[in-house]
Amino acid sequence: MRHTDHGVVAPIATLVLDIRREATVLGMSLSMEPPSSSSAAAALLDALSADYLPRSQALNECRVLVGTGEGWSNLEEALKGANLPLYFMPARPRSWREIVGLLGHRPGGIRLKPDLTERPEGERVAQVPQGGTPLDLHDADAILRGRFKGSSSSQREALLASEEEAERLRSRLRHPIAVPSTTVASIDPEEIANGT
Image 1 (spheres, rainbow, N blue to C red):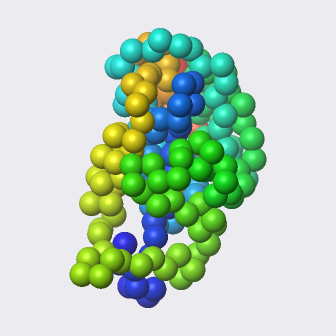
Image 2 (image 1 turned 180 degrees about the vertical axis):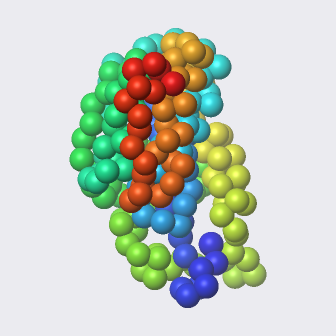
């Protein structure tokens, strides 16, 4: 991505992975900002768009990496109403070895650099091949989605058992991404109780 102050900078992808059989990307969010509850909620919403797909195997565990702060607390609250076996764990930068263990060396031909995730934009300078041009965020998102879709031999599966459950969770997840994670509005407890 072209950055006004730093030239060409690598964006940050937040991924929802299904590892029931092999690591399959169910959802993603691409951003220039550091990881946040907003990008996590956007990736989860993207994953929930697959809920019309079959579900041959229930989830044994749904690990959610979370940061600190009000936005992350709101995301945790939104997810607690879902019919998922949730396990919240502190987010930390993922090592290259961990990512390769899950996704392989170059999933879909994409060179991943997880060690850059927590770095500011000025330290995420990227190289463009000779004769190439930097992509905008929209085009990069489309390319990543296409490549991730073809990088796994597994069929994508739904996270939740029914479309009704998925719609309730989508509704709750829209609150944390409405505004930046540092200023996320509190989720109304009545909405949670009513499943909206």
